[in-house]
Image (tube, rainbow, N blue to C red; front, side, top):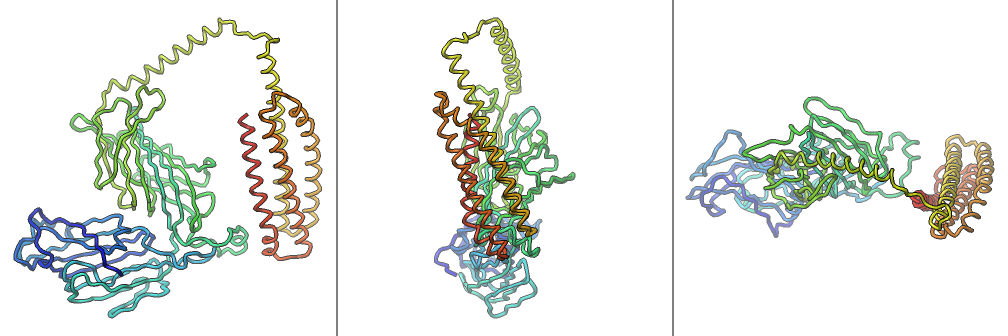
Length: 582
């Protein structure tokens, strides 16, 4: 392990002057590395002794460049909770604990695995504790998730006990000693990484704090190689993708309510909510298992009682709420927290137990006049240890709460006045005017387009029946039943084609349809092309089953056709959506 550059982090014992590095000695170092998830946690107990002529004020902690790049969280605390030290006098000693948390420190090896393969990862470190001081006695233990170890570096005094590897003890090591070690082991826990998480916390003085979280998630483990197949796990129950992300768990506050979860398509039914007096647990199952390198995006939201989060002190109100994600063992590359304050807030400031970027924006919402102040906080490289409470302070006049009700009452009043004026006004249009005739012609075109839309949707439903017959064929092997379904489908599509023909003739002859005719014609052409590809796929599959080809051979023969069908179906869906908006 290279030690060309070190990051020196300071743990302050007192505010006295700092002596030279050689004045301190680490009497004992007990280091424990936890490799039980994709987040690496290193817990060290250090006993430091003052061997110099002066009182000591600081202890320096050194990290190799390789670890410093991935360091997400660092905390130092006295080993005994009641221990108090104002300064290390000559010959005195002090024991404290250091917790260092690292992200992206485990490297998948191999970098690509199949759908059913286990995930192996590689971890590099040093058997010696890297320190700018002499170390008298030290030991190291690595705690793994599983007892399956592919390989590990063997040094003097190395032991393996189940899923734990122990190195040491080692004695009288000079400053900055290093002895590289590598461990290659099985770790099938999913590497859930939020490349970006945007949390919006909106305060309403009418009784609620609304939290909305937008996730962009990726599986950061070994990349999945080959095409995804649902047939393989169905045929072999033990093939389930050991390292796939199958569900996520979020620990919400105990009185969370109005909880929802949705992705880009819509609401998800496979989510479960349960809670007690201590917490509310939300279990989320994505639409599909996420393998290495796969991505997904989704949103969760919930409400909290105002009295659980908002307090008042010295004439100012302040929000006290957790900073990071409630998801268990989630690494967050970039977190943006937006706290939306009520309109009229002033004297705004934010405080957190760690450094982060912060600035202010303005958000215009319903019934706002000048907009609401938004405190924006941003931090990178977060782990669950960052999910601590932070505060946003502000001043707010209670009279400002009357602004929205008064605006609402005024709006309703003016609405009724407008209705009265409208009812007494003559707004009729002559049936012989050009605008009336143009409107009537467009309405006829719109009705025809809607009928075309409906016919295409019925055609797509017929396509689905054809696809269903192929699935039945793969399950039962009954070729004749599949051919009968094909024959029935041909008849339905011919009838739909007859219904479509006069509608297209009308649209092609109507001047009012000029602007949308090209899209409608493209839709019809794409549907016919999609039907041709489906028929070709159907013929290929039936022919293969008649020749009694194997399932893998059949799947390979229709794979290219299926790719073209999927692309065409997406184009047809996009055109349908465009026409539906008309």
